[in-house]
Length: 202
Image (cartoon, rainbow, N blue to C red; front, side):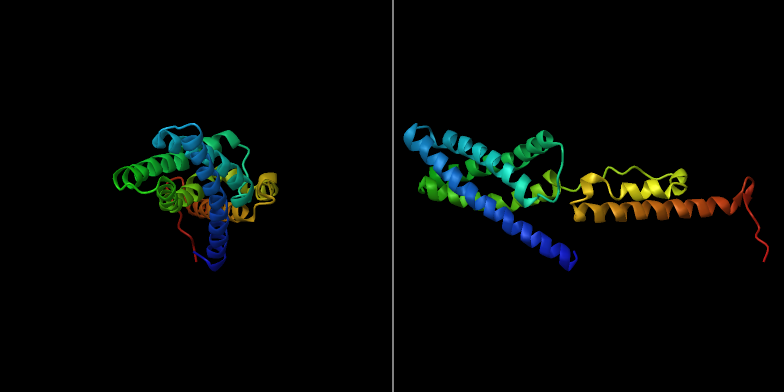
């Protein structure tokens, strides 16, 4: 990982934790209301509090933490975030709450704070590599693409990448690799005749 990529990841990690810190407050408040106000069982209250917090965090991650990785597939992203982060958060929180609050008789708010911290790293990795990952829908280049350099340049400046230098850099490297492979293939094809390799006179 380059120094620039490391810095971007570090800043993203700080943003992720900032959103997570607000989410902790939301989750603990919802848990307290459900537990003390509605007298729900602590496991059911925990699951509902986690789900509400997952939806809250997704909105902030979409608009703040990974704002440079924009996508028009909001529902698909929200579903992926809810399944990945939500599943880890719900199962992790409920399992740790069962152990800490149920078996060890720890205060349920303290137990929930520990459970949240334990799930944060897994959720960040899932979000960065799965939910908000950079998508590169560029097709494989053909020989005909070499005759259309203008079209190729336009592909590097699509509107969806204009404000996303990280994705544009990734797409550029992808297309450069495809071009190199195509040039090599053309070179090999031109050095072979229909009946085998051509003998090139010195």
